[in-house]
Figure: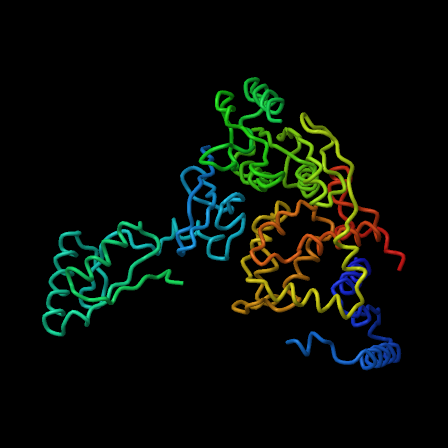
Length: 59
Length: 135
Length: 268
């Protein structure tokens, strides 16, 4: 269900001009510390590349 | 079941938007903008959309109330009007006409609004007249 | 155009098949929604179009819901265009309308209205009057799609900033039947902000239209700020159609929307 909703949301974000990469879905269990760290590192680095959102500036 | 839609005019301000009230068994339950209303062309503001809510509100003043020793007490129209007339006269005599002001309403008719300003100007002698929907 | 509709409705009322018919009535210089309960008052029945095609479209299905909730034992008739019929089917899917208690009397839309609406199917499955006009594609969506990301955000931020938060888009929507609305949840939408938090308010509503919006466009017509809401919800409908091969109102009543069942995940 979440997979479906996130897929729809990414398309909708793109249509309204927000980078869909700002939304990411990942499954990590409580026993997968390294995977969690890696996912977060990748995500933050992607966000840093994208830079501040214009929504933040507009607000 | 008695269901009808009634065409009327929004009473919240002076724009005069046309709207339909949905009335179910004598209770006004919903509002729709009139699509062919020349003023609003099928649109309403947030107040117009919710105009059905005040009609049956328990907060509405439906009988004269007089504050006696800090609490509002239901009184007869005669008693309320006598009290108001006496106090208006006392205040005017003590402090002058411009110590009084009159606030009118969008939810009464044009004729009633006319009477209030006429009363303020001709009977009391002040131009202190305003209206809750002065936009 | 209304003669055939009038005859059909008269038959339904006189035979006792329906207790009342929700249609449009010519009165006071306007065409407005009215519940006809007597075959003798049908002279005033109109099917729409006071000055131009489609200028008197009302959310009759929304009024039908009110009637059916109040009087669940009786049957009612309702005037439907293509969009209204999609709405009726979707309300049946969402268990809001008992199909045995509704008789739809269909009319097909004229070409001007069909084109202005960019309607995929400007006619109901069955209609007693009007002619079938071919549907069109969503040109308004393609226009925004053609912009780059930066321009799209500029476009929508500008449009959403005009919002006066009248909730008219929700209040006129025949698919908005929820008793509790997300747009009134303090955690999602702050009270007192004007314009409402941009773009949270409008995206929240857009997401709720996924699998539900039947593209009647009444929201767009009711918007006092002329925000192109219809284009936004058309896009949502396109996303749902592409990802899940589902269009509300075009599927059989009862076929649940993809975001309300587990089902297959999208391919990408």
